[in-house]
Image 1 (tube, rainbow over the protein chains, first blue to last red):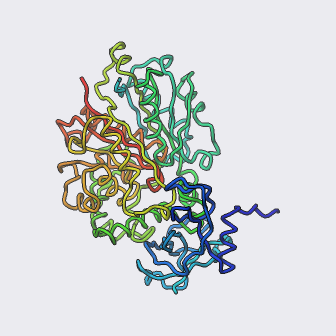
Image 2: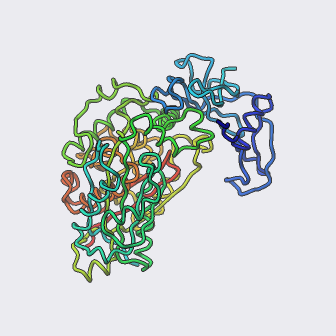
Image 3: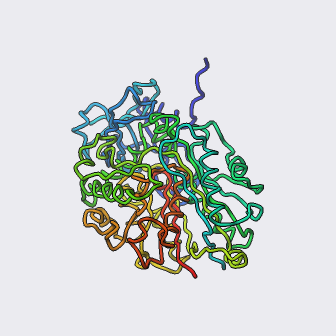
Length: 128
Length: 388
């Protein structure tokens, strides 16, 4: 069995988070995105640079998922959230906190964890 | 410019038909539509067909020609895929082709087979309408995505799960007399609030079921309908489509659906009407919160004001603006690729008086359909009006 090919800039982005060097993509007009991007969907700029991700973000919204896809069967129930990191927002799994204690505004850091079901990497938020 | 006429429509019973193939489901709806229209198959210029998960559910791509064959058409056939708005996109392209004179008769339709693969696989298949890298890998499911929007809505505008429960109760009540509906069972607000949670804050009764089914309609140019003496008084007078970032995380607002705002504005301008002219609407309530977002985007309510509409009785069949007289996706069911055309058929039947809930708007002349794909990254809106 051969390993699946990495998903290019997405896996490189996860590598960077693991190395403590998380970044986002910014266009010349200050619009932030996550990789891979070749053009800013907001303004059409193709002048994109990698910028350092803020160290913490705030939960914008969250849900405890009890009916998962098969790829998350052993993870359920789990919390999925969107967190605002300033220039970009990120979707991730919230860990290290009781699901009932997650609220809008919870301050989190950005990490990479493993999915219990498949062992694949996933974006994880933990309270800071 | 011609306003295409709806010459006929056909919809299967929506529900669990795990043993029925997609081609069989579509054949039933398509042949019913052709028979209803009284149009010769040789006159059909094209089939525009919506389907979303055929590769995953039936290991079947390239469904356009397969479905043309299934209803006896020797015509070019193209599949449209815009997640849950696939059939709405097919309708829009049909309207354009009929208006620009390229075609005189087009069959539009869609089908989805979903229950044969079970709940877990269907949940997985539906999820791929989201961003795989940034949403699905973070555990996003479709109920989960709408739950994120619902929680954001409550935070920004107020409202409660109980308000959402009133939407479910309303749509279940509307479906009681709809023989096409998957769920013909009345529920109470308590039933909805006590149902198991799927993705907090949404529970089982906030979610549409997993559904097999098909829908089809025969659209013709005005000239063709007149020349052939068709009984086709309902016209599609407005069409609009909007788009948005695929991933929720990339949108500036998590409790609004600007793709639907754009689609509605375009469709209203196309028809030369405004939201105040609309007598009823069929909207994409895949989850209860989706109905709230839809009626706000359609301009019936300001943003943040639609949450109490069902609670106040404004959108039920006795209210000022009935929403989802069919029972909506919530109770009628949501065979993804068929939904946009099923909405079109419902609206036409309400306007011509043949729908069992048509008495809600006895003098209605304008109906609107709203068909959303994914977390509303794609939306089509169509305006239907009575023409004599």
